[in-house]
Structures are given as C-alpha cells and as structure tokens.
Amino acid sequence: MHVMILGAGVVGVTSAWYLARAGHQVTVVDRQAEPAQETSYANAGQISPGYSAPWAAPGVPFKAIKWLLQDLAPLAIDVRHWDRHTLSWMTRMLLNCNERSYHINKGRMMRLAEYSRDCLKAARNELGLDYEQRTGGTLQLFRQHSQMAASEKDIAVLRECGVEHQLLDVDDCVNYEPGLAHSRDKLVGGLRLPGDETGDCQAFTRQLAEHCRELGVEFRMNTAVQGLMCQQHRIDGVITNQGNLKADAYLMAMGSFSAPMLRQINLDLPIHPIKGYSLTVPITDAERAPQSTLMDETYKVAITRFNDRIRVGGTAEIAGYQLNLPEKRRANIEFVVNDLFPGAGNTAKAEFWTGLRPMTPDGTPIIGATDIDNLFLNTGHGTLGWTMSMGSAKVIADLISQRQTDIDAADLSLSRYQKRSQHVPKKHYSY
Ligand SMILES: Cc1cc2nc3c(=O)[nH]c(=O)nc-3n(C[C@H](O)[C@H](O)[C@H](O)COP(=O)(O)OP(=O)(O)OC[C@H]3O[C@@H](n4cnc5c(N)ncnc54)[C@H](O)[C@@H]3O)c2cc1C
Image (cartoon, rainbow, N blue to C red; front, side, top):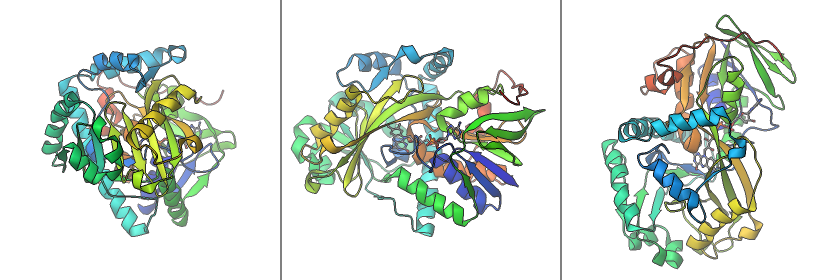
C-alpha cells in the first residue's frame, strides 16, 4: 500500500520508519526544507515516560490563576489570539481536571510512553543512532516541602505502573547532579526517575529520516499542504503548492496544524497549540553543568545536558499560532538555568527558540483510524511528543497494516472524543 504521511516532525518520521519496515511504499510531505524544523526542532530533550502526565490535573484551574500572577510565570495567555476553538479546547481540558480523569489519562500516557522508550532503545541499538543521548534519568526538583508532599499522588501512579523511582533528600540530589552544589540551599529534595533518557530530538529525527531514505521512503520537502480532497468517506488526494498528490492511505502528522487542516473537511480534532520556549546554552564550565535532565517543579522548566550544550525549555502560553520571541519569556527560562547552575554556561550566546506543542485536552495523542476510510491520525503529542513518538508510530503502523498492536490502542483513537457525535465528512476540493 502507498501511504502518504503529512508532516516530517518526529511523529511523521518515526511513522515513516515503521511503515516502511512493514513493507509499505511511503511518501512524507512537509513544507520545510528538512525534517524536524518546527516543534521537533529544539524541545527540552527529555525521554521521560515516568514524567508523562496530563496538564489537566485536579487543582490546576486554581494553580493556573496563581501561576499567571507569579513572577517568572510558567503559564501565559494572550487572549488577542483566542478564538472559539481555544474556548472549546479549554472547556474540554477543564472537564479533565478531576481525580478520575487524571488517573485514566496518566495511566494511558505512561503505557504509551514506556512502550515508546522501549521501541526507541531497540531502534537505537539496531541502527546505532547517536543524538547526544544520555541514560541518566530525570530529577524533578522541589524547592518547597508542599511540592514534595504533593508528589505522593504521582508516586502512587508510578508504583501502580511499576515505574522505578527514588525520593531524594538534598544530599542525594547533589550526588546525582554535582552541579547543584552551588544552589543546594534553594532545594528541599527531589524525585528521580532513573529509567528516563535524554537527547537531541532534532538530531534523532534527522538520523532516522536518513534510515527511512535507505528503506526507500520518499521525502517531498518544501511542499505545503493546502487541503485534502475528500469525497464519500475517502481521501482522493492532497492539494499542495507543488500540485496534487495521491496515495492509497493518508496519515495526518502535522502537529498543531493537523486540527485546522482537518477542520476543512469537517473533522474536529481537539488539538490546540500551546506555545513553549527553549534556550540552547553553550557550556563554559562542564563541572558546574547538569549531567542529565532536571525538572524545576516551581517554574516548570526542564534543563537537559547535551554534549557541550545545555537545553532549557518551558512555559505554556496559550496565544494561537504566532511564533514571536518576547524577551520576557527568554528571561523566565534564563533565570532558572542561572539560578540552579550558576556559571555553567554562557546564556548571552544562547539560541532562543519557540515551538507549538500540539495539545489534546487529556494529554494523550490521537492515534488511529477515522470515519474517513483511508485517513489515519498520529498527532496531538503535546508536552512529551518525542517521548511518545516511537510507540505511537509503531501502533499506527500496526493499525494501518491491520496487525495486532503490542499495547492496547483502543483508547488512543479519536473515538474517545466522539461518543456523542458522528462525523459527516464535507466534500472539499479546492479553494
Ligand atoms: C518548549 C518545548 C519543550 C518540549 N520538551 C519536550 C521534551 O523534553 N520531551 C518530549 O518528549 N517532548 C517535548 N516537547 C514536545 C515535542 O517537541 C512535540 O510534542 C513534538 O515535537 C511534536 O512532534 P510532531 O511531529 O507532532 O510536530 P512537529 O514537529 O511540529 O511536526 C509537524 C510537521 O508538519 C509540518 N507541517 C505543518 N503544516 C504543514 C502544511 N500545511 N504543509 C506541509 N507540512 C506542514 C511542519 O513543517 C512540521 O515539520 C516540547 C515542546 C516544546 C514546545
């Protein structure tokens, strides 16, 4: 079967790899010149199954108000860019902010993320991938005793899912991350997830794309998708700025842009862009730098060690699809790396970047078939899209190939949002 994948981010490229290995003819279409140029370009570098959790959690609506008022706020909103889709997404997210939904959603994300990490390890060993990876785990840092107490709930889920974890005092945190010796008086403890990994998502995606090419995958880059030709529950082709393209089946993997594209054919995906920022800081003193990934629970900022760089990522901004880079946001994440690892890097020479997390209201991506016979989805990977990418890709490749999936995938599809309404596809040919 000829499968056309729309989007060459980490999700599209991992899907291409598994689909090509399953024997399909695969074409990947993307508007950029290279894979991983948008949200997969400079994320925080965590492969963190243990940290996989939905942002929609009990108490979050109240915490959100506190965060908005906080200095160096981890959350920001810009209502000038809001529309009815923003409001609908927010409502759905708020409906997930209860104990029962959190438990279901976290369990589902962890199932996918753990599987995904195992798929990643297998591919890395098989292909000899090198993307500045480290296997030193994640250390969640607490600056307040109340944060440490609140982590009990997450620890209960970790226990239930059999995920290795260690609750650490400050001395232990410094043992694992000696660079914290210079900021130990700011900390009260940490939660370490030794099974987590780190690395450069862009390097990973580009290398995997090369392996895809060796398997015969065609990459049609610089090709912007403008619409889908949909008739009688089938996609007939894709309209692009390079002409119309056809295949037997189509896989939507355009991240945050999946939702507006599919809205044109009346398919409602509850995916909204949540903007985040990162700084990539050249290391000036390796002894003062982090060894693996740390997550500052107070500012919701992740700090990851690459070979000779530190990647710092964070902030959730609900501000539509715009990609501007305000200095104020830079200052937020710059503060955290300088506060925890003073003198480790030269932030004046850092690369400042922004990306749009494709977020679903329940935190889990949308993977599976649709009511349109030959249209499949692998999108909505939100905060931990790289972490979940390999498992998601293997699941969708198995579903498209009509094979049994290795993990339960029934609750990953769009149908979990479609209980009450059935989709009626709209005929759509051109503009
Ligand atoms: C600040 C920040 C930190 C993060 N940290 C982490 C982390 O530590 N660990 C982790 O696992 N995840 C992290 N994430 C999330 C992760 O980066 C994303 O979930 C993931 O990159 C999404 O991948 P994707 O392939 O779905 O989307 P993208 O990478 O955005 O790929 C979508 C592709 O579709 C293409 N496209 C879009 N529209 C069109 C069109 N009309 N025509 C043709 N092509 C089109 C784009 O060019 C792009 O290449 C972070 C995100 C941010 C913003």
